[in-house]
Image 1 (cartoon, rainbow over the protein chains, first blue to last red):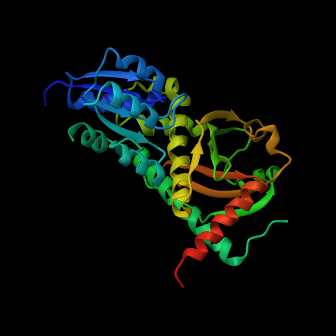
Image 2 (cartoon, each protein chain N blue to C red):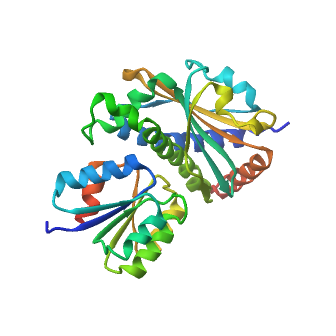
Length: 118
Length: 204
């Protein structure tokens, strides 16, 4: 796979580390940027237009779907996946309506490979 | 005194069963081991009776993740397990994904357990919300260690609450935990309304 950039947004450091470790194990040359909140991610968008954004839903400040909206405005070509423990149908439905992919936690290697491959 | 009729009780038990099935499945993926769950125990009582319901745990040394929820249903969800097993759980979560020295697991203890609690408690809550077709907003998880009194908020002590208790155990690792949902009277009334609506929606 050609070199890509990935933005991982999750208030859980452990989750960011796990996602990052799985991506690096598959694509060691990819550029990975992390943010611990939606607001921190938004600040990074002026510098970074990631190919892929993997974002949590429940975070301090703006939630994952509000962040997805901002990413779509700033970086329309970014492929966004909501990766969250909040697996309610209502959240899945809202994500689908926005054209945002959905993956439920827990994080597994298979899920992350699927996200970055699709 | 709040009581559930037989059908309401049966329905709530089944919905909690579905929720805990999701929670156990999530935990099983994280720790790569079979997780056994008990039949849910449902009671209305003051919170100080919880201690009597945590058999197998030393209530002086607990680890907990607590997550509030609101929206169409309000309350708190708690994951409780033995404090001295917390590092073992963190090791089970992280060792297959990342290379971490055994001595460094404690650096991640609080965050890893918060995330485990987040996933388990949300799996349970989401299954309940999906089944009863409503939406709940969950707050960020809060991790605490200590005795049971320290883990409970002062406002918990006096009110009557609905206690939904399920035990999760990893038999091969001798790790046991409980998931407890606490809801006050107002929220219990709302929950009963949702249950009745669900029962009435079942084709006869």
